Image 1 (cartoon, rainbow, N blue to C red):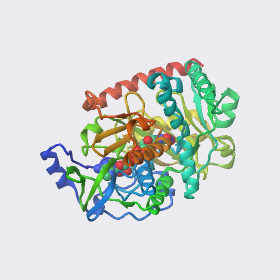
Image 2: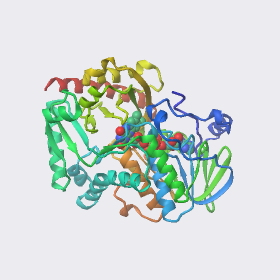
Image 3: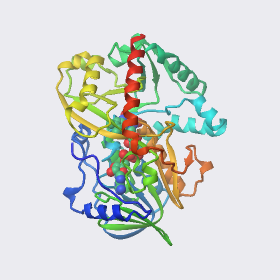
Image 4: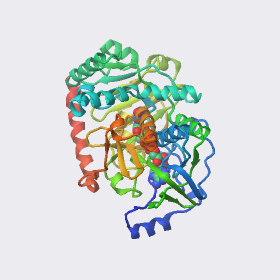
Length: 460
Ligand SMILES: Cc1cc2nc3c(=O)[nH]c(=O)nc-3n(C[C@H](O)[C@H](O)[C@H](O)COP(=O)(O)OP(=O)(O)OC[C@H]3O[C@@H](n4cnc5c(N)ncnc54)[C@H](O)[C@@H]3O)c2cc1C
């Protein structure tokens, strides 16, 4: 994998020192821009549309910074609504988490419907529940409408229960969604084993609204759809600075500037010093994935034979899918260090061999990782950054559907929607205290969660 981190800078808040440093580090030399990681998705996705770097001064209604699902969906929906859009992406569309994730299209949020209604009130909370439950519909609809070639399938998502301690929560979750008309059901040990092809779980929550797609292929398809709708997309164009002027905002990149009344910063877990208050409101954590070689027909008949996707109820969860060409892809999180050293993947490989012992002899063809943005309350948010400037993110590992749906909300913000119109909370960025110490803090949390997971798994 090539560099995951890259230097965009700089604050609009007068950090002249780091500005100068960043300007020196910036280059329009394409070789200096980050490349895609050596993922299975990069190896198999259809090529993306041409997105030349921004050049000269470009006036638009709206500038979108970041070309992941959030930014691409926002650009697509805003362009469809008739706005003139310039999107600037530091590398290429889908370079970030959008092109690296597990491809699982997951409905709902980490918090359950009743929790959300208790927290936000019946009406507001109810809208958030509906929004999160329907987010996969938008993804599947966009894929169908734009005939995006991304291996999409909607066989459902299984939340596999790893120990007795987690079972009541899943049963309660099923009950709450069923009460709202969603066709979720609990599966017993044998049913889960037949669907997933592992005996490791005692039960599972089946959600038919979920599914799978090849994430980078989807991101590239979305980029093409946004272009077709009229948006102007520019790769290798990191926003290095955002300044307010009389007409709105000026977004500088190394080879050109966008001048727009409104800005959407859609950089999520990859946000750095471009807008420090935003980056300090999110907690980035690394998630790792490995992909096997194409497995034998016999193994494919047993492991995830019907194409379901699964993740489990561990605090440090495992997630897995079978690709159309028969490779098992296994993902998980826990490590904080970035890099491509193989030992960072040891725990994921061990989990795969434990869950699916048949894969022990399978060759591993791809290893890659990416950044997930967490929030302290596990809820995604729309951040109000300034007049005519918003951001969206913090999907906490459920961004395929939620980022696509939030991008549409951000486009609505640019179109005049106000906080009360939106199902997601709109908040000011609130930098987390001790954000600089998040590495050690998350390390302690990870160790603690591992202990709890191991203890619960023994109570089977
Ligand atoms: C390994 C992994 C597995 C995951 N698995 C799943 C899953 O199975 N299901 C699920 O629902 N979610 C999953 N997620 C989460 C999901 O991928 C993300 O929530 C989602 O992709 C977020 O999309 P985004 O557009 O907000 O951010 P990103 O896709 O990260 O896009 C941000 C973009 O901003 C660009 N950028 C950053 N700074 C600048 C700048 N200054 N100027 C211009 N551009 C900039 C970056 O280059 C990047 O392309 C996973 C995430 C990871 C990392």
